[in-house]
Image 1 (tube, one colour):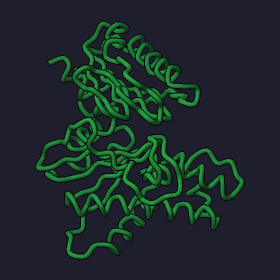
Image 2 (tube, helix red, strand yellow):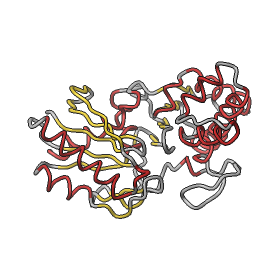
Image 3 (tube, rainbow, N blue to C red):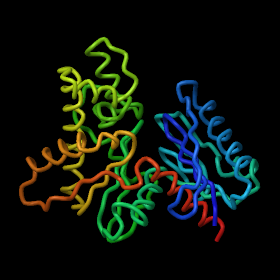
Image 4 (cartoon, rainbow, N blue to C red):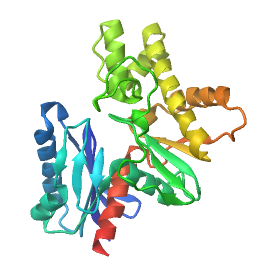
Amino acid sequence: MVVIGIDAGGTEIKAGLIQGSKIIESQRFPTQREAGAYHAQEQVLQAVETMHKNFPQAQAVGLVVPGVVDADAQIARYSENIGWKDVHFGKMIHDITGLPVGFGHDVRAGGIAESLYGASKGHANSLFMPIGTGIAGAMIIDGKLVDDPYAGEIGHLNVASAYGCNCGAHGCLETVATGPSIARIYNERSGQQFSGAQEVLKAAKGGDHIAQEVWADATRAIGTALMAYINILNPGLIVLGGGLSRAGDDLVNPLSSYIDSHLTFQPRPKICVAELGDSAGMIGAGILAAKAIA
């Protein structure tokens, strides 16, 4: 069956015509969250309308979003990075398309996709952790996804940073290790105007000492959060996704070194980049769409 899968993130909306794990066609749209929560909502619905118009053969639509979601009611309850509160996306999408709708959390959907088709296939205990505009984790324990709406919020573990978080707390991992926060901290220290973490990494590799410090601070913070997870749940595999995972070895190697230096008696988990790349959430949305037909 052919379905539409849409992953609405804080920076962009990834939409595709999906068949199983195959992306037949895809498009990307800006979320434009800086224009406000309602505008970002309308951007998502415009993406739905465009995809439905372009691909009338689709049999269902799946949408995944960040934050706290009510998958059964198909409502985005709360997203601190975008500002959504109680947005009834499922009903809106059905009204636009007339198609069955699947709805869920972006990271958990991506975790399902990676466990079925990607890097964590065949692993009973794993963590899928995308790092983009936000950070969260999909936890697979004994082969099953932990599907509680408040579970996996690794981005809000306190790593003793000096910054306030959109959630209202101080010191959260997201304040120093997301793409936007890495760029923001670098800009504050350097006076530059970089737009994302990839620019900071490029500068770091070019010898920029400020960029090197910011990147090292971010990877140490991620390593601190991962060590907490390792100590509690002992995953055999940690899969990194989201936009920051495009850094590849420049992300994996410092994280591996940090974890190696902090392990004592614990088994060492394998750390790798998601095989589905930043399309994991979109493919996961396709999985939810297919389930909505059954």
